[in-house]
Amino acid sequence: MSWIPLSPEEWTAVRLSLRVAVVASFVSLPFGIATAMVLARGRFWGHTLLNAVVFLPLILPPVVTGYLLLILFGRRGLIGAFLADHFGIVFSFRWTGAALACGVMGFPLMVRAIRLSIESVDSRLEEAAGTLGANRPWIFLTVTLPLIVPGILAGTVLCFAKAMGEFGATITFVSNIPGETQTLASAIYTYTQVPGGDAGALRLTLVSIAVSMLALLASELMARFANKRLDAQ
Amino acid sequence: MTLCIEVRHRLGSFLLDARFETSGGLVAVFGRSGAGKTSLINVIAGLIWPDEGRVTIDGIDLVDTSRGILVPRHRRRIGYVFQEGRLFPHLTVRQNLLYGRWFAPHPHTHGDLNRVVAMLGLGHVLERRPGRLSGGEKQRVAIGRALRASPRLLLMDEPLASLDEARKAEILPYIERLRDEAQVPVVYVSHSVAEVARLASTVVLMSEGKVVACGPAREVMHRLDLLPLVGGAEAGAIVEVTIERHDERFGLTELRSAAGVWRLPRLPAPLGTRLRLRVRARDVMIAMSPPADVSALNVLPGLVADIGAGEGPLAEVRLDCNGEVLLASLTRYSIERLGLAKGVPVFALVKSIALDRHALGGTAGAEAGDEAEAFSLHRP
Image 1 (cartoon, rainbow over the protein chains, first blue to last red):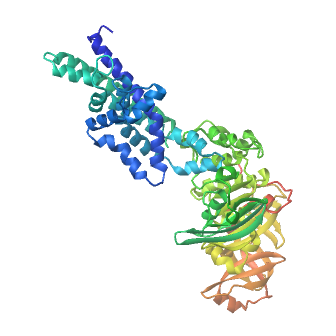
Image 2 (image 1 turned 60 degrees about the vertical axis):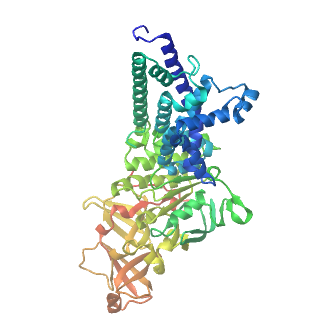
Image 3 (image 1 turned 90 degrees about the horizontal axis):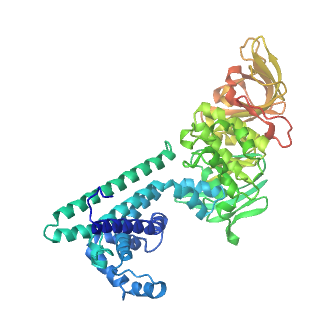
């Protein structure tokens, strides 16, 4: 791709950003659907608390979220130590940590989109499926899930977009190591901190815009396809 | 099929307190809006868990709160045709029809897909999605979908309420075929006298959350004390008739009943077809002697069997016409002027054009063991 004048280091940052964003949005998807389902349909004590916890990263300064991740998922953190010792999963100063930070930051957006979609599903259809012999898991798989596909697409794209743009939590949690945790955003930030880095910052900014535009277009097309399947409904 | 229900359930300030027992055929749960009809069948379907009570079908307990039995709705095998259809919008008609197949323990109890499709006339829409169907087609798919799940009982909650007259006429014959050909016991919720008169073998009459009467359709519909609940202006007698002769010259059809001969505008049905005729009380006139110069073609002799009690300018009179019941809605002034009382011989007069097509329906399954073919005037 020599027609795009990016240096190998810049390509690394772009590829890393894409990998982090894709992993962040797809790994959080099942959790996002489950959480949205619980928030949309569940009636239990602690509902409001769960809702607050899920949406907290949206309101907290990203630095705070990043610092909390460092405390919890760092090498000596409560959860981080456990995962490292038992499963060999290490987050601190790795690209996986960047993915975790991006996933946490994008999670509220994803859950919100899917939750709205679940709430718009006519629960009487699920009742009807029940009278036809389907139990709850089957109803979810055959009725609810297909009907919330547009919401899932929207949520995934939002999470992906948030992950592509995430900066504060990532840099706090996993720092800014070229080739390991330096994402597009951190690379642009680095450029702006050195003299003569303007051209590099601009190149990466254009790449960033292009990726975001493509993601939005793709989601628009998928949503249109999904809606077409539902016809006039 | 025997269905035995005994429930008490509070919904806000409304108390559903219903009990009845019935067997076979098409049971119409009938009553005004807000009488608790839908709540009652929601209890049967398992969409409402009653505060206390018992629901038993063929000796199988679905609900028995005293013993803590509550079979979840997906294990009840009770088909439900909802008022609004509730088809799955993301599936084609074929997929909607096949939905229950994954869960049905005996997948072919009520015929295979082809038979259901043929019976409901859905062949041409199988690959469409519900968004592209007319209201009548949607309801037929909903009926087919419920049938394919091999239900031991089919619940229908005002399946025609959201449709216009033409669409209703399109669906009624299919429900008659369901009753007669598929032999599925049906509990049919309705507030329409016409539908109940046409379809029901048994009527459960509800009012304000309670079952007021339960019994054979004609018995319940002919009780004078229940007429206000049965539906005022639409109330009438249900007469069983057989097509006896077609009069080609005047385009009339003669129908034989125990009460005598009825003449109607020509019916497109073969001789010998058995039908139900609904004769509205307000369309019946009373004469003390057989009128010589009168245009009404239907003049039937009978005896006054009962006169409705109560206040108001109007009263219902029940006539016994050789074993067949007729109802007449008269002013109290006329009753007094004619000197009507129990046992007085009279003549009932009905204009032929008052007996319209909507007053007719096939009867084959209405009486148990009847061999006659189901017939419908609206069958395509």
